[in-house]
Length: 149
Image (cartoon, rainbow, N blue to C red):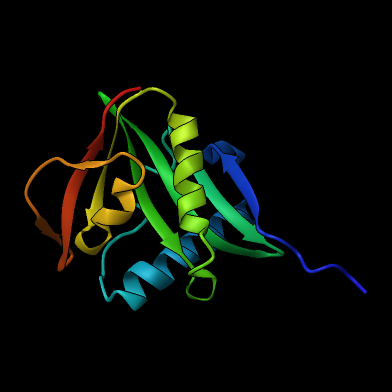
């Protein structure tokens, strides 16, 4: 009898991602953002491959269950593409990803564009509203920031 696989946290730059993992990450992002949320947009935006980008995800067995990326924007680190597979929601994976992202970011300032209904989630990690609500792909978003340190 084999033990049940558990969620394993991974961090990598683009050049350290193998093609199978990259495929699974892009598939998860498409399933949730494009299909589930009905937002036709070009997810591979060129930023995944930037040298300063860090990819952070949970995998269990051969499945990517939750993911986010940290981009090295001028003046602040940008957290984005925060996503959890439908069958993995409610297990606290997004919170654990945020904790790891903030560990990776260290004492540098951070920004993100939160879907409006998730501002309370990001506030738990020290993010504050940084501007007016706006529509992105038909979904209300709120810019948020977290000060350095």
